[in-house]
Image (tube, rainbow, N blue to C red; front, side):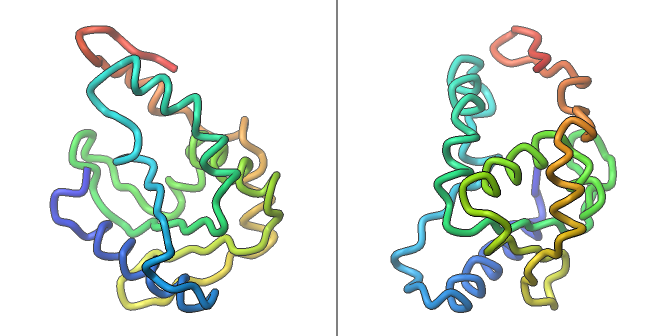
Length: 151
C-alpha cells in the first residue's frame, strides 16, 4: 500500500533514530512491521498472523508509529495520524504493547523532516479505548483465496 516508498523511507529513518535514542546497535534491532509481516494473500496464514499480533506487540522493546499523510493505494482514502489512531487494529497493537511495557518507548513520527517523538498520556488514553476504534478493514470484506473475509 506504499507505492511511492514514502512510508518505508520514514519507517527506516525512524527505526534508526529510535535505536540511537535507546543506545541500541542497529545490527541488534529486529523490526516487525504489521503489513509486511502478515501474509496478505493466503487466508489461513493471515488468520495465524492476526492471531499472533498480541504476542508480537507485547514482546517489542519499542513501538514506533509511522503515520505520514498519504493516499491509500487501494481505497484512495487519506491516511494520516488521525486515521491511524482511529483504527481498531492499531489501537489493539498499542494496547498489547502497553500491557507488557507500560507507556515507555512509544514513538510517533508523521513527517520526513521530523524526529520520532514519545507519545503523551492523552495519545495513549485514546489508543487504549480499543473498542471505540473503527474496524473499517472488517467493513471492506476482503477477499483472500476467493474467500470473503470480514474480521
